[in-house]
Amino acid sequence: MFDEIKIKPSNKEEQYILDEARKYLNETRFSSVWHPNNHVDNVVNLGRKNTKFLIEFLRENDNPQGMYSHFLIDVLYKLYEDDIKVEGFLGVSGCVKLLLKLYDKGLLKDK
Image (cartoon, rainbow, N blue to C red; front, side, top):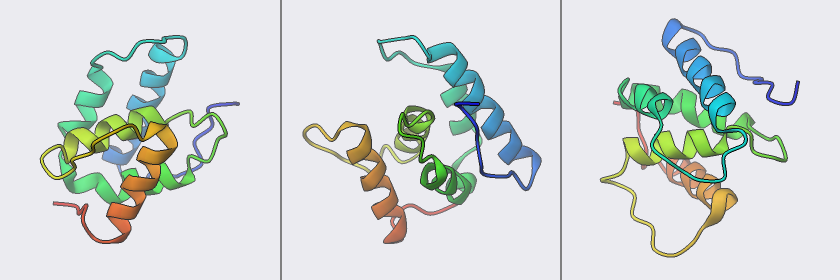
């Protein structure tokens, strides 16, 4: 299946995140316009305590099409909107690289 998720959840919240990611993909698959999304908001409402899992999901999301990249970028940027400031255009791959770098440097932490 083209939207296969390799990461395995270890609790109900992590499973919920994966379910919301699938729902997001199913609803936006053929959309060419970004708009606010309830599935992103639902995961953001869980808080920052799942940052490590979200980053692991982002790392394993190595599909050439980045099937879940938009979802994960939206969630992480909303969670850390007061901490991340970007000027200019990064594109999807640039955003992914930035988020991974920020996490690796300890700037995005679970709370």
